[in-house]
Image 1 (cartoon, rainbow, N blue to C red):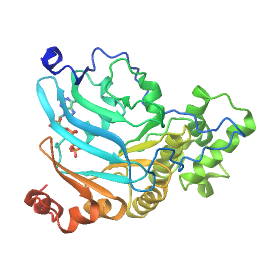
Image 2 (cartoon, protein in one colour):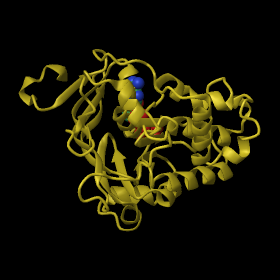
Image 3 (tube, protein in one colour):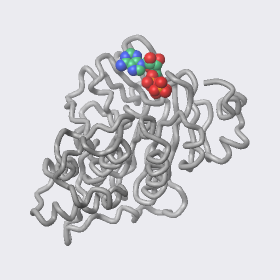
Image 4 (cartoon, rainbow, N blue to C red):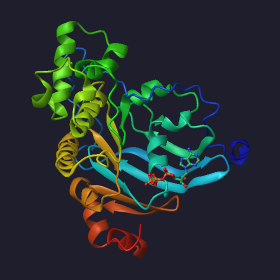
Length: 309
Ligand SMILES: Nc1ncnc2c1ncn2[C@@H]1O[C@H](COP(=O)(O)OP(=O)(O)OP(=O)(O)O)[C@@H](O)[C@H]1O
């Protein structure tokens, strides 16, 4: 259907069935700088005008389908660099669908197609990258845009091997460099103190909250710019949830974070920007404080007040 619409030639049209993607969902990107093999300082922003929140990902007139069912309608949204953006809205409104297009996880979903513009800014001097380009190397994309799922999903390997998995695939590190990277990642994910004496024990022996922080460590070990989080706390107890929320807030100085959540308190506690979706459409987006205190749209107001959803 939409794949033959030649009138809109400036739109990218992506049919996941045609894509040459792989099913490797793990985000993997270099975390070590060339010089000194130290974890990169990703806070530095070389683009002009850095300081104010800049757009990292621009989504414009984005539509997506599962077969004939249109899940997202003409959605436009800018995701700012080094901030936390929360996607909220009732079940089935398209939050996860949009999230999973941002790192092309939907490539592996049969019948999933998309059309529109979705671009990630590159370093100064390089043209923005078209995320929906069917010829894009999605493994490289997922090294830049990592994802953490609702349910912690450590590999049935040791804690150490979980974190080292991506770097082993994509980097050539010495043993001591790998040790350093594993420690750095676990520290960033605020789980090092709890696991440092049992790095070679099975990851599946950790608590749910520890497993989720391990999954965050695994995602950041490969140096992504963006972390997508799909209801990362929904399987966790309140104490673990607070630990992850603190972590999200902390990590935003170095990563751009997008979090899907059903928990309004969580969205208001740990995000800078909020986007409210309803039935596949973006109803309103803006500063989290404004969305939760003075939204412009009545539907947004009703939702954040818990009147529906
Ligand atoms: N693989 C799929 N095949 C067909 N339809 C799908 C598929 N995944 C999602 N959908 C449909 O697309 C719409 C959006 O789903 P999506 O999972 O993005 O919603 P959501 O807002 O994330 O919901 P929830 O909060 O319940 O996770 C829903 O109507 C859903 O049933």
